[in-house]
Amino acid sequence: TATFLGISIGLFAMRARNWERGVWERRSGDLKRRLHRFRQGVSMKTVMEDPASGVMHALMYYGFIVLFIGTVLLEIDNIAPSPLKFLQGAFYQWYSLILDVAAVAFLAGVAWAVIRRYGAPPSRIRSKTRPEDAWILAILALIGISGLLTEAARIALMARPSFEQWSFVGYFLSNLVPATSASGVHQIMWIIHALAFLVFLVMVPTTKLRHMVTTPANLALEPRERPK
Image (cartoon, rainbow, N blue to C red; front, top):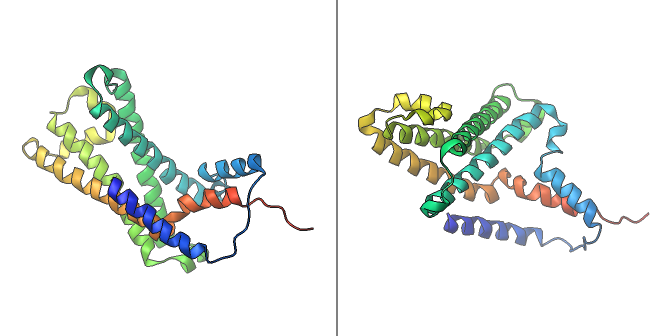
């Protein structure tokens, strides 16, 4: 992940060289207004001004963020010494429930985006659709689906303990994973999930996904003193 994150940053740097061909302009001061605009960008307030696409983007955006935070917490708990482990008991059950809800919201947003772009798209979307859009939606869907299937295989491998019922999607899907092949399925799904995320890291600076980074930055840099 560190290697591919470095590749992603390097690709952003290559694009920045193209931006630097323009004339430099000082954008300093007015910090309060800039922070306000930046917060609007990272909270998707500007996107939510259009309800049709705003809710769709919010489902994907916030669903992805919650799942990412959940994955980080899982790894922290995994490497923590026994006295410091926290994913257990009621906390783990609520953690499982929240992540499954986030996964459903994320995949619902992806499905909505597919329908909106390829079902009956408005003319504005039709004119801007590119081949990369299909790849973006496919990778996002693969990240969400492989994550749930990894969870389902793990639950099946654990013989479906009752406390895992809080992972309501994974627990349901675990019925589809035979106990005899649960270990192999878990390994395969885990690898697919990890590879899909690495591909996502490369796609962020090379496709329109980069607007997740550039839009908040643009909003923060937008305010400036204009001549009367």
